[in-house]
Image (cartoon, rainbow, N blue to C red; front, side, top):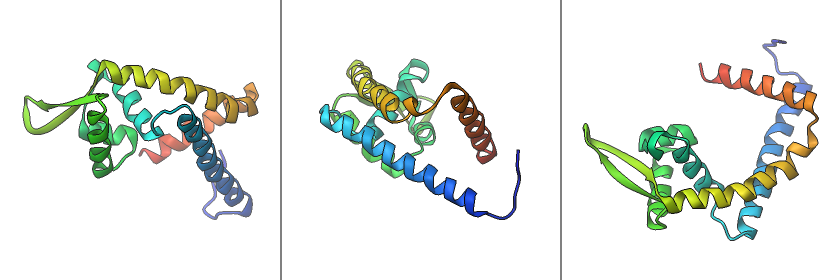
Length: 151
């Protein structure tokens, strides 16, 4: 691993490519959702996170952390998801201030519909541009970056 305390032109250029590609690819996948009459990627992130959680249930504070949304943004999003019948809130029995978000059957079905469009987008706009070796290198590098950023 190369370490540098100064940002060189190539690293700066690759950084800009990385963040630009991220935004543009997410926009393209968002367009796939829209064309299919599906809600936004934020909805998908919440639904998937709940699906992967024990009993399809998480405290709102944990959900905010796992989806990388601010608490206030998550609260508004949970309001919309609850109104759409995709999740419901329940009180935490051990902490009166705590609230859980719980995925409904309709929420699980919506996540699965959205996954179809999402997986097609990942394959079309991302996966097809990486050979097996590049994929392994990218995976190692991103894991290393996430581990360092999580400290």
